[in-house]
Image (cartoon, rainbow, N blue to C red; front, side, top):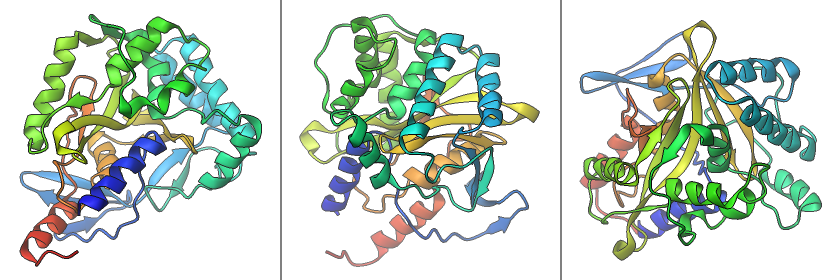
Length: 328
């Protein structure tokens, strides 16, 4: 079990943002709906288990215009939006558009299939010492002007950001001050190996408050998935394993904008509400059955995201594991 936890945590760190695990989630008391979701009762609320997503890799003018308009309406700066689409276009050009869609299309999965090996090889052919950008760099680049941190001391690069900094230093707006801000915002947070999820949620809130972190944009927000790293119990910590930007979209919908990982593309994904966004993120990331450490949780800016709930399939599997003899 510890070996599994180790591999999962290392996978998240090396990928820069994302770990994708194929798993068969079986739940009870579910109802299929026409919108492609399954509502699963967990306590007094419903967990929305998505069976697919409507997404775009933003390779065409129409989808780019839609996402750009949503970002600008959410008061994201014109400069940041232009820099973002320059990164999107650069990725599309380097990978020759392979495996990327046009417009917004429906996928019968939470994880569209991408040729990561090909993408990385293409980038290596052009930039041998450059891994590209990941979720944290992308999200920070979009909202950096709307994030204020009172205490920004110059600090050493923490372990969880060791792969981020080469890419961050290459962004157009790079300055040493912004690098310090990036490190202070995303640095791993010390905790204990036995801390519960509730305790870890409070730990994140307290840390952000102590640093004086303020989120000034009331329309666009950072959506962060926190993980509990207990590989070495003596240095247990919390870190953001994935992050994206959430903005209002057309018809009252929400648009979640993300860079999946260094070697995977940009996506804009449409959701009706935060419950669907929760189902997407927890369906991808709350899938560790080892029982090592507490489970992931989602923050919107500086607090727990509304409609956050655990993945019930993982809850059921963990209960089953506790009831069955331990296996090697």
